[in-house]
Amino acid sequence: MNLIIQGLEIENSDLRAVAKLVQASHIERITGQAFRLANANPHPDIPEYCSEVKLDFAFVPSGTKLTNFGLIAMDMDSTLIAIESIDEMAGMNNVKPQVAEITQSTMRGEIDFAESLIRRTALLEGLPQEALQKVYDEKVKSNPGANKLLQRMQAVGIKTMVISGGFTFFTDRVKTELGLDYAFANTLEIKDKKLTGQVLGSIIGAEGKAEVLKRIRDELGLNKEQVIAVGDGANDIKMLESAGIGIAYHAKPVLREKATYSINFVGLDGIINLFE
Image (cartoon, rainbow, N blue to C red):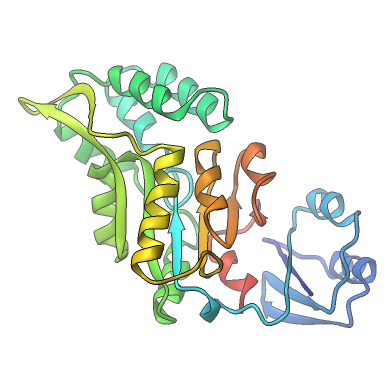
């Protein structure tokens, strides 16, 4: 078992202290922000110590490499990109506080996702279609390390996919911009170039995300252990449970409890370092 330690700033004293706790045989530098503590033994004090000094940690079985995987599935809002797109849309319709409150409650697992999406979308009724493009152009940006992560995944032949409880208007554009292999989300109803406040078809929520992942996984001929899933909120739990490796990225506690690994401090490229 190896212990991967990552942080925006890693003090040598902290690295040595952790290595001593886990009785590591030696320390290997992966990058300036990531180190591998070889032949480590789990220790109950590691989570608290790393949290206090703002370090991410992951006990990874020796020999686990990126080439073991064939698919990475990612949530979009607050995972692959740095915003909640529906909240920004709400800002264009002067209802951002109301929508953001529902969003946060949903991410904590307090409201069923489908009900939440219906309520939030209804508040967008009358929003001009061009406002969506304005949100994309002015607000959407990738989270730190996203491009590096995707480039590395693609370089070793891993298929890349975004599965969002948001809307196809954004996932389609993110797919094109980042060169993803697949993109799935909900479809807004638009009439006379304005949002009606309705979602078309079945809603992709917690169950839907898991179903999409399993379908694409099966189409690619992969087993569960060959899939990585990444998310940040309660509606990603079932998606992560459908993957061999579930990663909670700067996530709510409800998801961190269910994840294989949590990344709380470094960027998305920290996923690469777990398996290099």
